[in-house]
Length: 163
Image 1 (cartoon, rainbow, N blue to C red):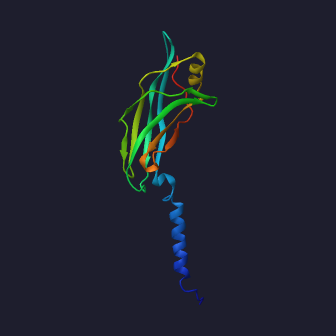
Image 2 (cartoon, rainbow, N blue to C red):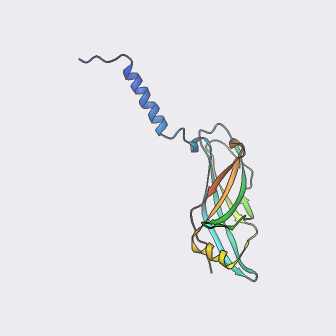
Image 3 (cartoon, rainbow, N blue to C red):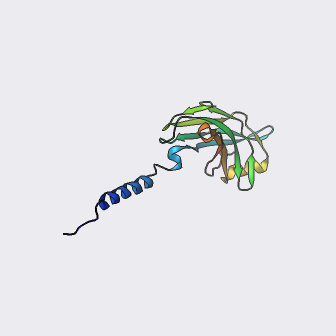
């Protein structure tokens, strides 16, 4: 019969439990802070008497991790359309449903529809770029649990519906 070191088994069990807790993500940044993502992009380029314009909406999904220390108040920063070369539409005039500021408690998830309130005019090159599929939406939100510092948000690449 093999004699063990007293307490080694309980020490090993505690170490395995600690590693499992760390590996499970309970201490990950997303579990304790606000995360944001852009989804459901539906933008359209339309030709009008003064040139092309960009209209439509996209969703901003906000999640406050279950392990967050408390509730937070979220405010909307600016959002625009970007390309690898830089800004295509620097700042979109947006209408939010529900409106900001938003109060989130730990574990809350909120989907906000952001609609373009004042469609910006696009020159020919900008319209072609937005229609090319090589652009994305980029912006930020701020929240009180992060000392109102901006949290960047970006969509994947997309192309608008075009004539």
